[in-house]
Image 1 (cartoon, rainbow, N blue to C red):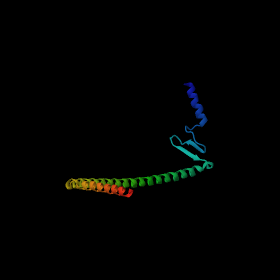
Image 2 (image 1 turned 45 degrees about the vertical axis):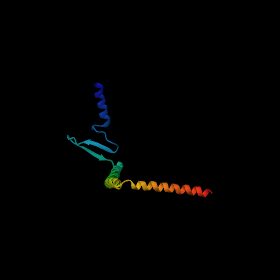
Image 3 (image 1 turned 120 degrees about the vertical axis):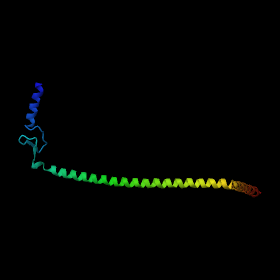
Image 4 (image 1 turned 60 degrees about the vertical axis):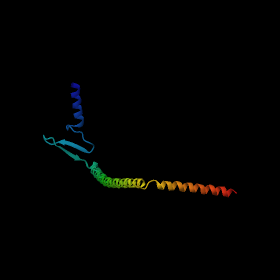
Length: 136
């Protein structure tokens, strides 16, 4: 325990009577018996205000960028929602048209298939006869 208490006194002596270590250019001193601290900035290190002003500008710019990103995200989200609604409507339309087509095929029968098969056979014979006669 004696070693730790001697370490504390040397540390306190090294940093001064104030319990707070200050950065270069800043000095601290106790005000009476209260816990308040007064800071005095040396004029040599006055560029701290400029740095704070620069940081405030950067924070303002970042806030503006974040707001623009938020606006763009909302816009994109609205666009995606509209696109989804359009897709749902298109799917419903295709489904209804397929149902109508199936009903009309069942109602009309398979006559159209017979016509397609007859047309294919006729076309095949025409090509066959043309190839037979063209060789002679």
